[in-house]
Length: 252
Length: 328
Image 1 (spheres, rainbow over the protein chains, first blue to last red):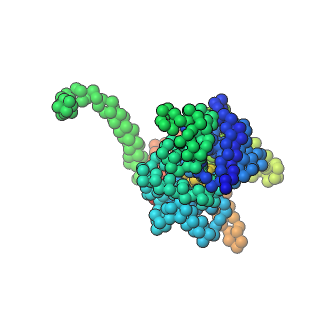
Image 2: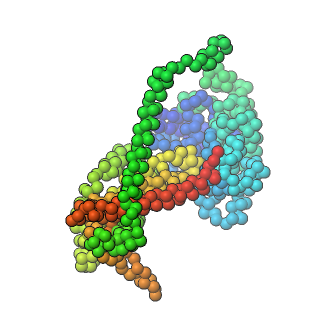
Image 3: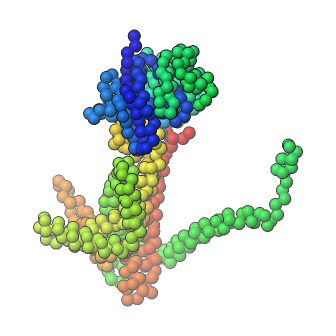
């Protein structure tokens, strides 16, 4: 059964005087992987960052329309942005671990939530790392500098770190674009496993990757949602000529 | 092709003239840099050469008596330490907090610009102006009003160690603010985003991610501030810096059964930099006092150097802790 997790209604986003998104409406379904594709500057990242209100950190941000998560309008006045960002975790393009030990990276989110008990912290960390399929690689070196890990491991540690905040939704902004094929493969498998528990939205430039990992694909172009459908439909029989051109590599 | 390029690569036909032409700039730069180093060494050597003879325990510890040959600078050393300490105590919190506000919180770009310009101008104000400002503002306005309000007689409304430290604190504030701002701005946006993305509030991001990484840079600013403040004579001129104090301005702090002697911040004090000025200009026979001037300067420089080395060690320790987790 598919339930709507995120409902985006007539969303337009502006940065100062440029419009990044124009009247986008789409429903993201629970426990599915939705991929946002489109050429650079089409608004994929802006859309992604609208979902956890990270855009607000950039000056001149304005929004029209509504974003509902579990039927709650996240742009309403009484929404606690900090709690929203715990609920909607985000993985960035480049791994952005803190220059601290692996352990300190992992306990950051739980401790800012006020968890101090060591056993409880360790449980959270272990669970998150197992989910992110990195536990075996880091369990013996938790006190080591996080930057000693390989870049692929770093990115998976980033995912584990996000999971320690116990989110419902995972946003991933080109999570594998800076990685080698083997690490990319690991991340993709991870995404596949994680969708059992989380609703995942991924931005990617890689068509094959989009085909491999996603259940739904949204194609954006110049701030507009051109097409949004099941992955199989988009890749076999796209309704729109532009979509077809893009996924077959004729432009973009 | 291969033949041609290897021919070019292997040809060494540079004449001496070409070499000089190419390296002329570098040679000039290198020379100028060494001139700076030499000037510094020259100053140190001259001071050491002329001053080291008078450094005895008597000179370091004795109170002044009016006779330069029997005088000591112990009270001035302690005064300098006390003023520097109080100055840092006042300037560091204000400096760091305002830098955090400017970098992290101030949103209006025009306001930020105005603040930056003010800070830069504050750094450019001559130090004697700070002295007059301290007298006019701290002593005659703030101190007098506190005295009236608390009816403490003449406790705050006179030149004293407290107001001298406060004036020096304002003098070194730009140094601390600018270095703190620079170190805060250096922390990459990705680090902040990561923390925000994990649901950290702004204050948590600053306290747990930004500030710990900025600490070595901030410490550098504090070192510079101490060195600057401890060496200034002009600002303390009107602010209770004594020509001559036969004993330490002590007061007793009662904690339970103990009575702890501390420097009384409401009293006058002696200051090394001002002492040099006195020996040089106020003495009837500057010839006799000359070695003592050098001696005092040597002690002042050594003090500042000790401050610096301590801070460098501190910073090194911070860096080491940071390096353990930042080495790639």
